[in-house]
Length: 111
Image 1 (cartoon, one colour):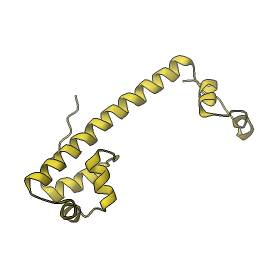
Image 2 (cartoon, helix red, strand yellow):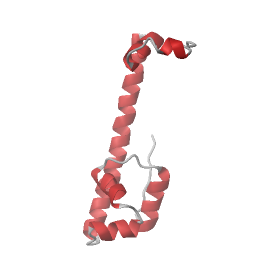
Image 3 (cartoon, rainbow, N blue to C red):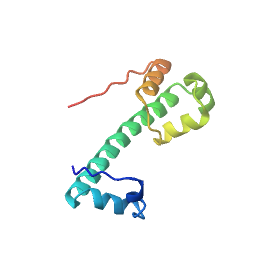
């Protein structure tokens, strides 16, 4: 990757981040950065979707309503709603807390 030293005045000449990006990186580098970002986003979405589906199944099999489940998990309504919709950027701590509160075994397969 290209490294350039910019000061505050240099940044003022750019109207958008796209313009700055084009100044710093080659077209190939930009395409690579964007492709890697899309790949990470897809992987993150697949993981959050898997957690969401597992929790919805857990709620159904244990006949839990939303309010009961949020109390069991010690979560706010907003946090649980985001998780159930698959719109949460889950941390490892949150996943561990969910596992502990539900007894669900959550595993990560790499490879």
